Image (tube, rainbow over all chains, first blue to last red):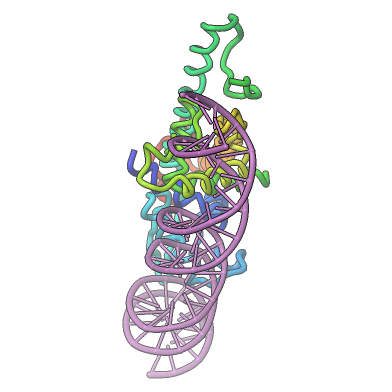
Length: 115
Length: 115
DNA sequence: CTGATGTGCAACCCTAGGGTTGCGTGTTGC
DNA sequence: GCAACACGCAACCCTAGGGTTGCACATCAG
């Protein structure tokens, strides 16, 4: 669960989210990514280091350039964290339901009941 | 999709993730939340403002205290963003498959193919 | 060999924002 | 009415980290 920390930290930055989306479509070098962003190559390189720390990206040197490829697996962990919050929420809703009235399924996507 | 931005920003901070998890179990005041964290009430209050901006939390004044309740719906949007990256990835994998060899289903949770 | 290209590293700048303290205001309970 | 409690607001501190520039080192094309 420690890596999940790094994933959310990484996804907390808009530029890094853009990079992740770009890399989902095609592997690319820092220079190529910088071309489609309003920042320098070095700035992009720093972000790629963060993404590598979060294991969201794998670097592979080919010739004189370094290709970065997305590894979507840590994203699944982040999704699981979100799902966990949803479960917690649903459990609470279920407990509440017991006290009040029997109702329908998951409340994850339902407006708040006034508690 | 603009709110999704705020959600990831909000989730980018470990303290706020802790708060979100806590609120998933029970509504609580800033003071109560601060009691289970190594920071001051005011610091928690600031985080709650961020969470409110991301619409992840709803404040309700009851008597002399303010109860904060989780609204898990924006989390679903974040999960969708992650899913979108996964789709992009799978599409790419599918395109690759066409050129190479017919293979199995979604590669979202599979190790990287060397591209 | 040489110039062009792509990186990595280091030094530096600067703001965002996480945390703190202090204080004035509203609410509850006796 | 008066403490005690719970807030909200404002001023302030301080570091993390996002961004930049400069430079030295590989690699490729001619």
